[in-house]
Length: 235
Length: 248
Image 1 (cartoon, helix red, strand yellow):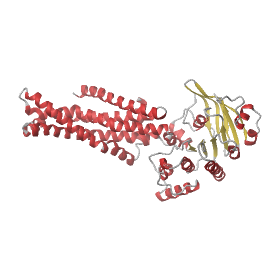
Image 2: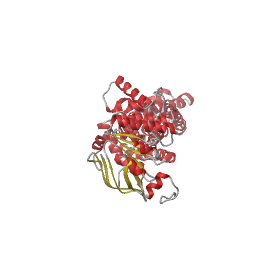
Image 3: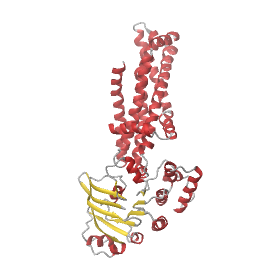
Image 4: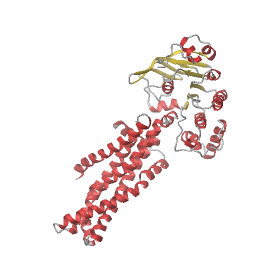
């Protein structure tokens, strides 16, 4: 698996694939994930607003709600939940697509034409995921913050000025940077494992189905484990 | 010329190729026949480096194709075209895009020139009005012909055919055999055909090799093989149930 990632990195530098292939993948991994990202972000922010409000109210600190919502989203929930959503939607599809190409000899056909399958199947997906994940994460954070605002300010009566003012005071560039680094690396993990599992899918429909399941499970676990390590380094 | 020397290949405990030796002469059509599951497709994939042997040597025009850099292997692969058993068309591309793909990726031809060459290649294999269709919208015979058009397009020196007519009706079968024969007469490529089409294959191939139990049991001209007295070859060609080849 390590060799697969190293070769993918080498190919990104040497032959990254045509911009058209990358744009196509960017649309698939990024644009088409927007709906699910906005939806989950809105409800994540709303539930954070609800939970946060009642917890902070015990200490008379409702004004800190914006800080709690924003820091939770920017540091942790935004990158992790966005990555898990993209894993479920695009990571599984990447594995299934490449897996089907493997079992129907389409990858062999590319090789017989003296074309490197990585250039067409792997590097465009990796590049697209590295671009799409930080952007999706940023959208997740913004939508989530407004979800928290909707519940905290509009429904529960938190002062709107305090919500944003406290948030602005508490969130520093390092928080945003750590969220960006996380989502960027999660993008690599999603495309890497998705492509790897598809590329080496077993025989027949069962092989592709198993590869797809393994891809989603392994990516989800690795995202959470990697998140812990990154947090401990970036905190 | 393709030369395989002392090639061994196993999948888990199954020994598929067992000290196999074979020479494919340049510019001729060589057919590989043999019972199902004997490793004929595996043998074909060894010739183009898609499958690596456990041991042995494989040469294409005197160049070793094993344990070399990918760029060197790709340079050798540029001599090849291949028609896969199920055509292996790219299912997310239309027929036109499938045939145009190698031209777009490997040449600097203009859009207009590519369009002309694709149209002429499709007409050569007897296909019209299918340009915009996707592989799952055309029949098996049409898929094979699209695969053949794609394989022929870059004028390869060597073409490998993996069961080009399996599962097709007799008329389409004959049409594809005629296409292979005519294309060979026109372009003079080296062809290796894995086939079960007996006796038709004897009319197309100049040489026939019989693969049995991981080895080339016999190789000779079509006439020599047709009249072979070797009990295994004889039974296989006649399709008799009695003889050394056991069904299970």
